[in-house]
Image 1 (cartoon, rainbow, N blue to C red):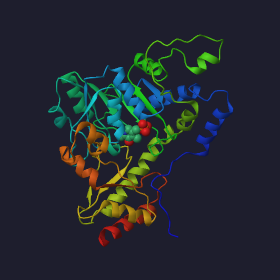
Image 2: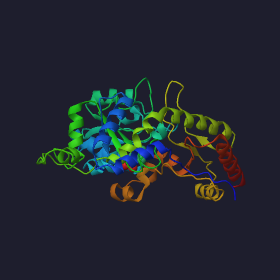
Image 3: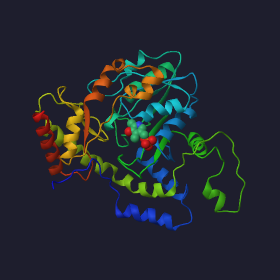
Image 4: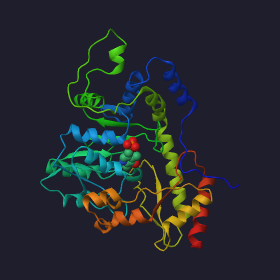
Length: 380
Ligand SMILES: *Cc1c(COP(=O)(O)O)cnc(C)c1O
């Protein structure tokens, strides 16, 4: 039996698991002191005033839009080259996602392309830091100021990044993060939102928990106090078990990012002379990317399904990030999109495959993945 290379392996340590065990042996499982500790540490890491622990990035995006008054009849400009949640969060908020095609080199939304699509109805821009590389937040923030728009970052791929000296949330109204199973830090399912004022953070803390005035631990640890529901809220609160799993992973963010960066450079070198194979451009030397995913664009003559199935059969995990959102059935049926409407995203979406990239991956693993892929492409 050949060696298997998983698509993803998480990085939870015995220390992380012990901390989660401590929570499970204590009285409180849900939102309490661990969540508070996580929020402080996460905000400190990002050097931003406040972080709010949530159950998902989707919930974070939804709340960020609501907090800034975005709802029915509003349009939010975003990218079709992302996970569906970026667009569905806009729909959940009652607004209309408006896609703008991406840069063919980076796969990122570009301020200059977005500007031409701004209308009277546009209320917000929602860029995604695709694969870990930050979108041009300086450019987007200039646009947001010029047209008085809300700016929200889908930073599910990028906790660690910096571009033009700017980090997530520094120039936007909110940045949203995911701790889903395959993300750079994970607790299975989870998310966070960071923002720049304690007043906003207080609104998010209420909104994540039914709009109720007191959280579970403040209601039950002291003398019973009545709670009130003061505003409409949702059920997005992170619990203490999730927070315990995450807390110490924050300390390892930068070391793990460097390991992924190293492996990505290695991949690019080993794959550089396969005819017809294309790459998303690497980040500039002046940038820090989260190096969340490494993708390649298969030669146009190859059937992606055939390559993927053969890779998997050879023991190499792979995935697709992403088929362009506007080509998915719900979006085609609901909004009448055709694949050609956003040709760049459509082409990336049809040719891309994601190769394994995580800190536990070894150079030998990368070599084996590359040799296997090369053999498959040459045989087709
Ligand atoms: C994973 C992901 C999300 C959704 O995150 P959840 O925590 O699963 O809600 C949103 N946007 C992007 C770009 C993602 O990769």
